[in-house]
Image (cartoon, rainbow, N blue to C red; front, side):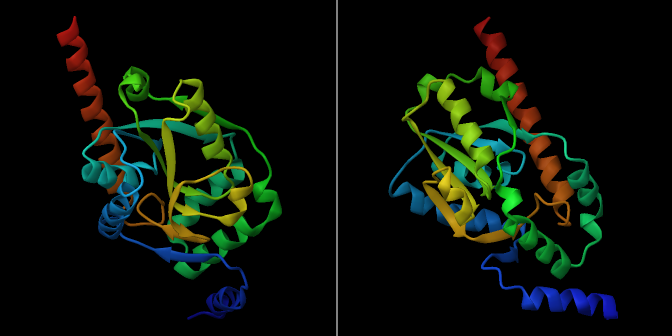
Length: 230
């Protein structure tokens, strides 16, 4: 191992952050989400799951299989960030310890949690669904670190008239976010779990293909239903 790599490992070892970083395969996530869904079912049984795309799909799909309910997606995007786009390109080549160190440092900075604009919009699948048909809706996200994205999604859903009909679930939640948004169900607190939703994972391309496949299948079903109504 090079001296350069050893220096980065020393940084990670001496890092005093309370935030932990772990790695999970898609299979591990799917199995864990079904156990998580079983726990949620003791307090809340959704008839519809709304997930934040794209990452939320990895968690919403196995949960929907447990609850036997449909899923739809909404999109929450940040303003363009050239620095973040550059980092995304080099993520696949980073050693695990370096990626973990950078993630921990990024979310530990006070500036990371400052308010920033999020743009939330419904997808064609979300826009076509009749929300009034569903009494219990579960909003699913992969992680809540600052809380700003989830807060904006909640506001968007409430503008659609579902206030009081939904609860929120996020696989990972950082304590810092609790000052601005409430998460009803979380699997891990103050932990970052790197999954197939990350460019770092060798399962990332399969995850994207699965998401695109689900979108195409859902759109086709909706089109058929529309034709039958006509």
